[in-house]
Length: 385
Image (tube, rainbow, N blue to C red):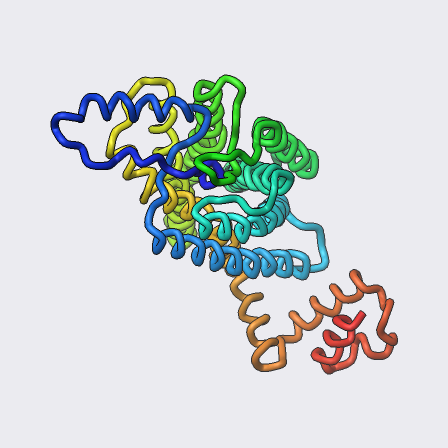
């Protein structure tokens, strides 16, 4: 992600008296080009860095809890095969779960003024895991949008037409594509001394040109193409619904419209600012535009915030794709009742009991205790296994 390429700024915005503007400008540009293989940003405000570090920590906690709830809801959902859309939601949750596990490292990195204290090996591992899960998350989100479109389209057009495609193979292909897209990060990520600080960043052999190409392909593959596919996949069902004149099902049309708006806007708002500033950096590296004070200020104070916003998408996904659905909201309510009231509805108890049978297979608890009326005793029994 963007914060992994953040480095110490050069003191290029000092006093700019009229007599020294030209020479200082030329000198600054040369100093920038001497670091042409890294993104230059500023030290920024200590308060800002502290706030970002705290935000990373909060996002990590919320993301861990949210994605663990997704695991629980889907695996205990019912005793039948997982649907295609839920399979992709589960994979998205796994990806986001792995992603948020890297946030504590970036929180420490940000708090230490982007000085990397974990060594070269961890730099390569954490940076690669971060980027790979970023790609995988976007790919699974796109696959979910396509799956949902085909589901709505088949329901509205012809129920007899079914597409036979193994979602497990699709998952393997998407993760393979994410791994391939991450290859440059795995190869060229390293810890480098810049101005006396150890920084975790990317170093390409030919400097800024290949770094610009890398950023450009990331913008295309991880934002523009997925955004186009997601938008089309969520807007086409609305068109189909209007064509079918579903006047008697206004609630469904309202629900679909609401889902479209939230999904598209959340994806766009979380990622667009970061990719927009990254694209500005691409233009600078290609010498299409000049870097100036505004570029410096944006990379000092705005860019770290956009990275934080992009990371927050990993804890928003469980809320958007699960808590908006009635079945998951009901199961969350049941779980809260279990935790605070110590009881659940009979259907939820039955589901949990079936889950215990499938997972633990009576390995630890006596057979007579599994289907006892005391659900708390059953759960405690299996937690001790």
